[in-house]
Amino acid sequence: MTATAPPATPSAALTGKPAKEAVRAHRRARLRRTALPYLLLAPALITFGVFKAYPVVDSLLLSFSTGSGTATRAAGLANYRRLLDDPLFWTALRNTGEILVVQVPLMLGLALLMAVGINSVLVRWRAVWRLGVFMPAVTGLVATGVMFAFLLKRDDGAVNWLLDAAGLPTVDWLGEPFWARMSVVLVLTWHYTGYNAVIYLAGLQGIPRELYEAAMVDGAGPVRRFTAITVPALRPVLLFTVVLSTIGTLQLFDEPYVLTGGGPDNATLTVSMYLYQNGFRYFDFGYASAIAYALTLLVAVLGAVQMRLVGDKDR
Amino acid sequence: MIPNKLRGWPLTFLLAALTGFSVAPFYWLLISTTRKDTEIFDWPPHLLPGGGLGDNLHRLDQKVGLLRVLGNSLLVAGIQTAGALVIALLAGYAFAKFRFRGRTLLFALLLSTLVVPEQVMLVPLFKMMTSFGLLDSYQAIILPGLCVPFAVFLMRQSLTSLPDELLDAARVDGAGELRVLWSVVVPVVRPVLAALSIFLFLGSWNQFVWPLIALRSPDMHTLPVALATLYGNQATTDYGAILSGTALSTLPMMVLFLVLQRQFISGLLAGATKG
Image 1: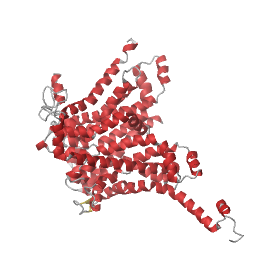
Image 2: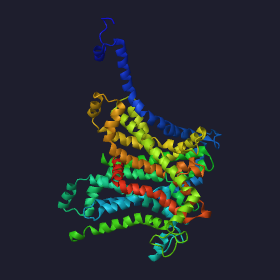
Image 3: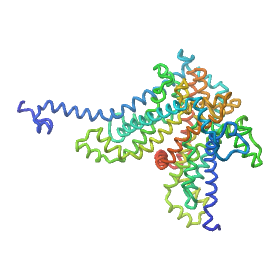
Image 4: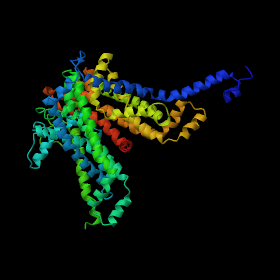
């Protein structure tokens, strides 16, 4: 040990270890500290990269290729051109759109009503209602589909019994194109209304009671209080649920798959089901990928439009 | 002016009706499960349970191999939940408590896949699993569900508010990083982990499209896939068996929900306020 070398770290001075080794130890410690976050992230990044990021990119590349199975070749924009001229794709898109336009407002309106009810101090046994309406949200999609396929049967389904018992005309729920779509709407509404109601409930509980009290002193009735206080305060939460439900409905697959199999006469064929058919029934991966990317584009555009329409009013 | 005592009743009735609408299908399902195949669609409908449950379950077992299918579902959901929790905890901790190169970019990349429809990944995943020779295996179902960006996001959110001093104090006391994670971080986020594990389990238990694609042999089927194939086979529709399978796939989640509803709803709310 030479006298000219100053101790590099306090620990070197204390332990009397050679300075060079102390420097090295210090570096190792620093390296360990820089490497640590990457080590912590490694499992997430590896699984993310392999099973999420890579498929997203691969799908885009595939959408520019053609051929069935794994024997593919470059095809430029052929898949996308075919998409534009494919009547079945447009049917699927129209079905999905029709279900979306009826279902999302219906469900979110009901959910808001539910949340206001459960939040109201005047209402009795609130815990029971909260539990009951949220229960469908934990049911699996396949279980829901099977359950309703039987409930909606034309001749001996329970829903038609009820209609008949009430003296109303019965409906061929799953056999008529229009009613088949309405059946999908009904099932989706049953499944997700309570879920959205609980989200609204969280928003409602963030509104200070004093606001309502002040409005009552000023003579505002329940409707005015709802439109002037509740709705504006809930705007971010409303936006969140509108965007989420829109995305969810655009990706609709399980319910119509189990409920109607896309029928009758393709009346409930959705974009996702059409993608599935092309990819895994005809093994046309290129075309399926083009449908997938058309769907992505649709989701992105609709999401952005909704953000702009609803979100910007605040600023 | 309505007297104060009566003012809550209209809303109460409305909520009762909506609750009835929500719960009635389950009641019908449970009653049907206990009825003979021929009684399920009787008129007038049966309102009380019958004695057909054992028979229905027996036929269901013969058709899909009940224990095997249930076991598959439990195994997949269990491993996926545990794996996704650990991965999300580690990643969330890194994102919340360390500054490092590429932090913002990586986090944004992770979140950006939230808006990509799940269907986009189906074809590439299928190709990938085919070339790995993993089709029709547990790995094929479990692996893609291990990284859940939403779970990472939620973990990060709940860890940012954890004071750095707490971590540093443990480090000064000579705790290694793993020990800091285990004895300081984990206890703090235990409620979040609980809520998240319920949600991950629910999602995994109910997943359908990907297992439908990746699984070929009936031996490997999870409960939803078995149910769908049983139901899709219209020629031999056995209502009693199908409905008891449906009830069986719903029951664990129902029980879990009723027991843990507080965590359930708090988990949901944690997700909801992220907007």
